[in-house]
Length: 216
Image 1: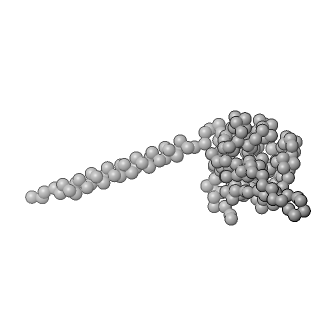
Image 2: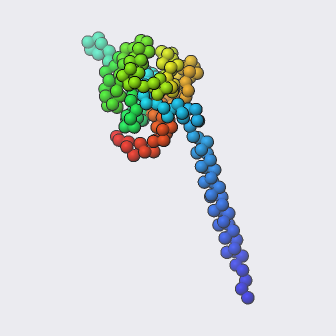
Image 3: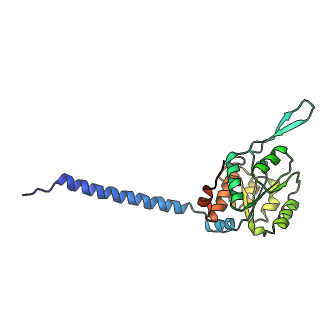
């Protein structure tokens, strides 16, 4: 007489239970991922973007203004830029987006950084930024719905009220955050521009494709 191996049978049941639990966890993970998808209205705005414009101080930098005194009495301005932002903006250009900055200050460091990142439009010393913005519209032929702007402070509001995708950095002023269609999870100068690029490229469905094109 063959006596059933209760231990083996129990192991089989346990194995099936473990497999079921594993499959359930996979399903829950997929559902969680779906829950993190870009909201429909935001995705539609981001998908249309062809031109990405940004303020500089407080967005591509942390907003600090560091002045280094020189022997001749002049001062050298120093700026810190995020490598993560740099990678994101490089991917944006590789993906075919046209990029630009509009800032109230002038800086040799900024011009060098823009050259490194192939930023096409560089407008410095713009007390009022609308003229530069409208110049970009003329040069690109883009509709306002096809433009995204990343800002942090009051001078950015006039453009943010007009573009298709207005984005505020996490530590932007309350007025700018209220005007934004999206607020980044990161502060200015800490990866906010990278976050905007990811948002746009994911909305277009090409983020995964662009990862393989990342370069140092």
